[in-house]
View 1: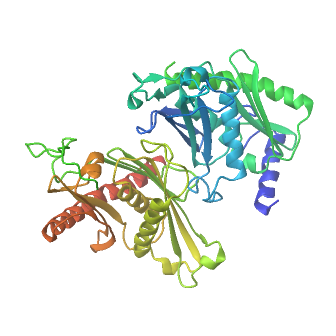
View 2: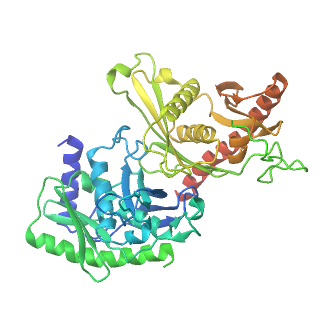
View 3: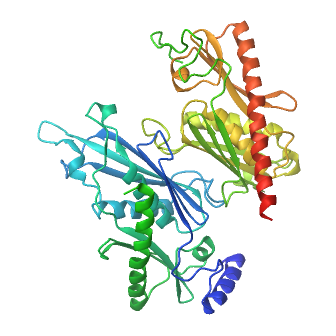
Length: 265
Length: 244
């Protein structure tokens, strides 16, 4: 571990022993969350999310394309993340690195597997033997603008807010009037990290840098678990996982309120 | 510049499609110091363009073979977000953005006191979030503010503005349709204190007289934008004073 990180670890661990965090938050408390929608006029949907100093912008573009062979009646969803050099002195330009791919896949999973998008309603012409079919293709592009920890929650909130305010550009493709996406109630992702046997939610960059393990839990409005991802080379105990899930459900409720308020539904 | 004669870009009263007069700029809004991690940053709206610029450095230039023992190198990276244009752009650099990055880097290098930082790099990241013609001018102008915000020693704050020709008439700051269907586009960046030309590109068709007129108009535009840049930097420091 680099010298600076080990100094940070000592400092943050000492604070944690007294039940404190560097910015004065409680262990399960989030930083201030701000969601702004329709920030890019060229995009079909867009949202900028700030969690503390972290800033993420998500833009949705839609196009008409062919369905996948194994799902001839379903629209296509593609999620990509860019860790642009603007966001951090440590991000380099070039093809997406492992972290960017993991982030994009976790956000994608939260949206795809929870079936918040009714993909069958995105079918324009189903594929059959003669016809390759026509469906809506949705591109979710995640742009990290300012990196101060907890990209997972910022990116998934931004993706959801962008989807909820997106308009399918049917008019541009001469397929009728523009209309909102067919969406169901979304699961909300909550991320926590563990260092020195303490688990904290919404980690700041400093907390992420010294973290042993990370856990993202997405829960729906019924309090059911819809997606999880454990990261980093440390471990959790069974009891810790259960505690984190419970706190994720509680935090998820708060985040869901903020999301619904920002998209006006 | 694909000319299409059936699109009227100037009406009988001399007004342009968006109601502007020939020598009128689109609305410009500049804010300095909008990002936490970057050493300097700027958010800029120019008509329908939305651009962010961030500065890192001076820091050790890597890989090492890029280092110059006598001065710093300036790396501007112009990048368009996938969702910034009508049809989604594939993420990552293409030939166009590599070229724009190069001419912007060279323009910035001229005003930065690079000799103060041998072997270092000064990295400028320009992200186009929403694009509506004139993104390179918007990007360079934002980069100038971000560099000042980062405290990079410069001889001047560089600024850019374009002029062009539509329906046979020279106008300032082309909008989207004007860029698509106009006759010529002339982006110019200057050092406003000395009047030195830092960037100059042209495509389309101009007579010598038209060039002179467009060139003067673009430079005039630069000076107007330069005042907005300076005000943005002033505003940031005013707000800092108020807090403390």
